Length: 143
Image (tube, rainbow, N blue to C red; front, side):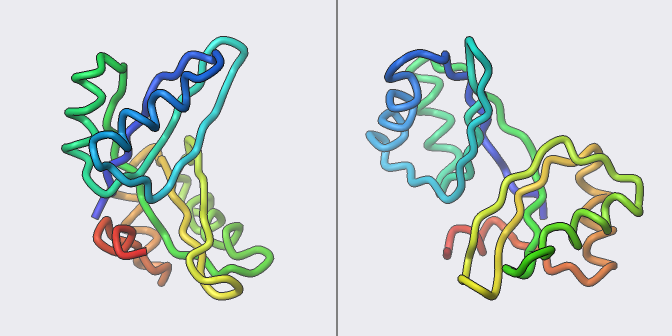
């Protein structure tokens, strides 16, 4: 049930992020989740979109460097410590978390954590067995 995430290399210069987002928008691609990590010279934009194939085609046509990676989406309670409890399950199973970002689905009730794991398949299995609700790509598209 891995989710496809698009990672885009973005120069750290005025307008670069807006250009990438406009490229997606111009091709009728909607963002469902987004994160950006930056350094002095560049950033990595990570997005979950409603149409990964259209996004990939648009980025390719615009000669924008990107990759598509598998990530896990897990539900966490939207309370203090909700995400920490999900991460503890992975830590106890010795699954490395490369990065994560999250968004609230229902205020005070549910949040969704996007997780890039050292072992996606095993991480999903461990979380499911621990009773952590997994979020499918279709679920994210309905949000």
